[in-house]
Length: 87
Image 1 (cartoon, rainbow, N blue to C red):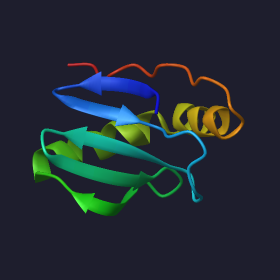
Image 2: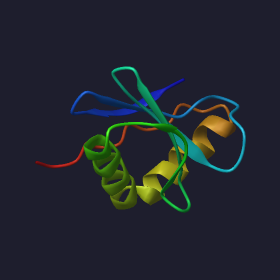
Image 3: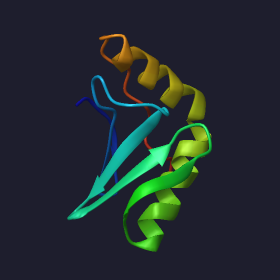
Image 4: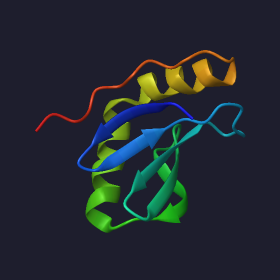
């Protein structure tokens, strides 16, 4: 499961051979989220509101890169890292 970004204690992953629809996983402490890349919406899990907002904002700014990462892992390639949000 390649980590494609890390910021503010949040790790963003795409998993090898994961199921559709295209999505990524976010982890923060004991919290986990699954986020649909196309709609930039939470599909599973829970996380504090502040971190969820930060993740969704970041995802909306990097949606095309997230699709590229998804396409890479589903074809067995290593995805590129994606820049964390600017401060």
